[in-house]
Amino acid sequence: MTDSEIDYAAVFQALPGMVALLTPELVYADVNEEFVRVSGRSREQLIGRYLFDVFPDNPNDPAATGMRNLEASLYRVLATGERDAMALQRYDVEDPERPGEWEERYWSPVNAPLPGPDGKVGLILHRVEEVTELIRARGRSGGSRGSRARVLEAELYTRARELQELNDRLRQAHSREREVALALQEAMLPAPRQVGHHRAAVRYRPAVGALNVCGDWYDLVDLVGGDRIGVAVGDVVGHGLAAAGVMGQLRSALSAASRVAAGPAQALDVLGRYAHVIDGAESATAVTTFIDCVRQVITYSSAGHPPPVLVHRDGRTEFLDQATDTPLDARPDPIPRPQAETTFVPGATLVLYTDGLIERRREDIDTGLDRLADALRVHRDQDPETLADTVLLELLPSGGATDDTALVIVRL
Image 1 (cartoon, rainbow, N blue to C red):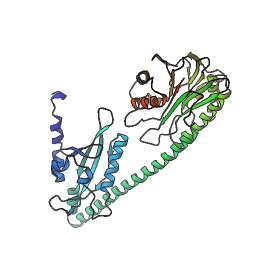
Image 2 (cartoon, one colour):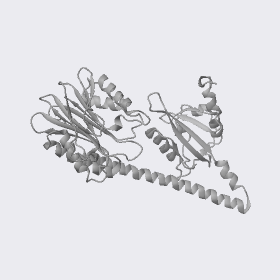
Image 3 (cartoon, one colour):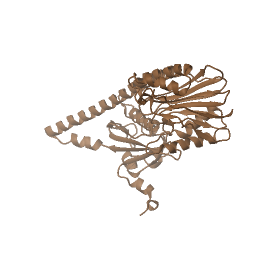
Image 4 (cartoon, rainbow, N blue to C red):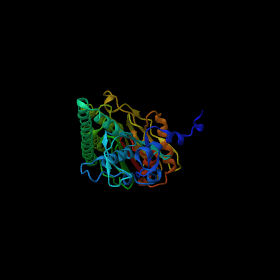
């Protein structure tokens, strides 16, 4: 039998456990037969209705947390695109035949994302196993054994509640740490601005699902000696506040070196020597470009970083990959780093980025580079701000990137 011959709608209805499909607005899109049977609600009472209108918390229990915990889990799935298994929950249900009377019920829910055609979470698969009867059966076992079973069950439920509360506290602590790290990131990175008379757009997107911030950086500087600017991006291995400190040191050092160096290779040489003495700078990468707008020449050098892209006015995309070398702390002295030049005409666009924009697991990096080149070629007539948003929208996963992403776009 082939996949096309399988009636998946019938399979869904026949699943032995309670399964529902929820929209991102938490409205029932479909439920299987077991969900209808166990919940005591008809399909008409479920389909098209908001989940918590159908199953609110027990108003007679001020300590009820089932609805709040379930809502938090569902929104985590929408935000992260990842499966979320919940701890054992007490979630009382109103008797459909006796309005106002609530039944004590226990559940073990799991929520999983179902991506839509655009890659975003289109539906949530909400699977729940009821364990109420198990708890009641243990309570009815009688004698000392029954008493012991009730004690163990109470202990199990208490531990499950404690685990849920601990997870909530950990998420809150994680959220606060993330906010601190993002604030630190913003304080150490230069604000978006015009460089000379050139329009520039910068974007920074932290990874989702963890702290995962502060590893990537960018810099734009006005260079001495005519209409010249320097544009650079870099990537520190690791995430979190420690990586933020390393990032800040490297960005500041390169910004200072660029103002006095004869060219980008010399600036990276200086930065590489500095990286040797910084803990946490191991395998850090960077690429920097010196743009001479009078001569219409870009001089560039890369320390193990993905190549910048020059988008010419006619749509031709040129990867600046003729001066790629080892990461910052990996080049032995006194061998100088390479640098190369390319020319442009006014109206061209220079794009620098970090690997979070192009790399995907189990995908060749050339695929990501081609995807970037196609997006830049198609949308090259957009202004830098609009182009930056378009590139991020087309290249980053809908649920958020698994790595930090920095992007700089300069209209020459």
